[in-house]
Amino acid sequence: MRAPAMAAASDVAAALASISARLAAASARAGRAAPPRLVAVSKTKPLPALAAAYAAGQRVFGENYVQELLDKAPQMPADVSWHFIGHLQTNKAKALVAGVPNLACVETVDSAKLADKLQQAAVAAGRAEALGVLVQVNTSGEESKHGVAPSDAPALATHIAASCPALTVRGLMTIGMPDYTTRPENFLCLASVRDAVASALAVPPSTLELSMGMSGDFEAAAEMGSTSVRVGSSIFGAREYPAAA
Ligand SMILES: *Cc1c(COP(=O)(O)O)cnc(C)c1O
Image (cartoon, rainbow, N blue to C red):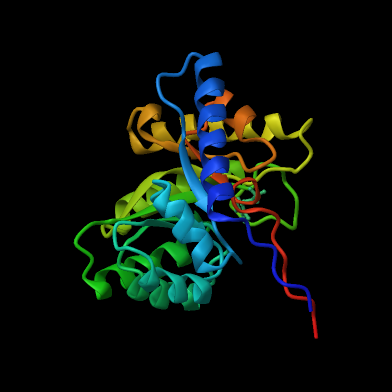
């Protein structure tokens, strides 16, 4: 068995500094006042890698798997803001919300049923603050991708705003296609969905977040208005999933 690839702490710190600089430069090129938030995607990575990022000042982390986040969250400092960015089954919403008091955002809400489960879970957990949620939009139309169709996002956002008082709609999230040449269309799509959602909620579009951009395209996303990029392998190194036995 090969040892898992693990970046040294200094590598993680250097990668974070370089990504922050590239985000700042991309934002400046686009004439934006502030760069997007950097969510450090730490799925499959061991705690020392997260601790290295924390020591370098990183406070926002993204995880994809409920059990992995339930294991890691109590072992990291309480001032970490956790973003859940994986597909969330409705029957795991309760455990996720109960087990991670510092869960800041679930970025992958794609049904009213899931929103309702998160609402119940947030009430049951007695959270002091509303749980932030993003509506996940399938901007590429690929069947393999989760998320609501762009035209269905306003109705889901309206449902959450009207019926889920323990949740706050913070904006929209998309994954998009990995092909750089087609992906800008997906980013442009998310920005136009934001306008529709803002008008449905009667709020200014600028109050809604756009979570888009990963290791391969976070600079393009920053130039196209992303307010939150989710970057994993560029910080922590390539992921190695355990081979099937
Ligand atoms: C894994 C993952 C990322 C990070 O991907 P990288 O290419 O490693 O930066 C971002 N967003 C989602 C939803 C992910 O699942």
